[in-house]
Image (cartoon, rainbow, N blue to C red; front, side):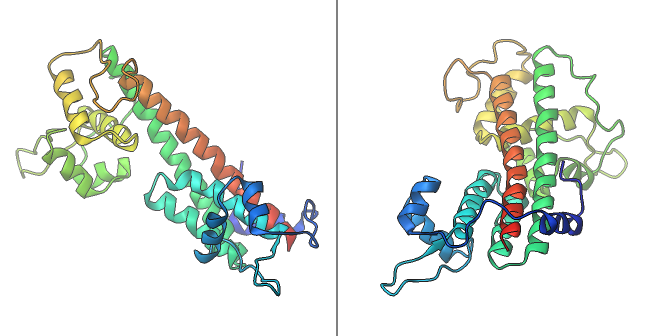
Length: 274
């Protein structure tokens, strides 16, 4: 799905039969807000931020929205599903909105495809972390495929798609101890370190604090393999455990991936309108 290049996608969209829009239909701010289930002030803010095309005014100064504007507002809601992830994913989603609102559809399609790819990569990493956590619970994680050779710091950061600052912070906060190459003193990351880093990354993405993760690892390093329930201070209901919470994070990522696909479909409808 969505494996075409941005140029191919744009051509496909332009050649599709236009449907679903009546250019004569107009809406008030309140009607758009009600249709999209948001506050009227939010609709106005979308225009101010450049997420939807400029809205013409009637003689009384009120905004007059078209169905095209309505579809742009819907696309903003879809895009915002993934902005929670932050970083490059958030930037890509917002750039799709701004480019589409400005009529730069070729670039908007390109950004939307890049955005989907980033979300898919994030989902893949979440799946690896969930598998590691489940294997940790039974102390059987050797079967999980990761690079067999030792990696240097920059390669480890690249593999996990995290910053060097994040790696240093996790080590500085006692979440992980990285062995050193006895010949040159450089940090080296083996399978055990990478397993642990995947777990830390997943828990940080799931919004656990460094203190909570540190507490969990202290118990794990003491030999705890069962009864992980409640080890993390920030688990919402007390009966949830680390494996359940991370799998719930994976479910959320999958929903965001679905929304990334819907973003492209919404962009398609907007391009068909023109």
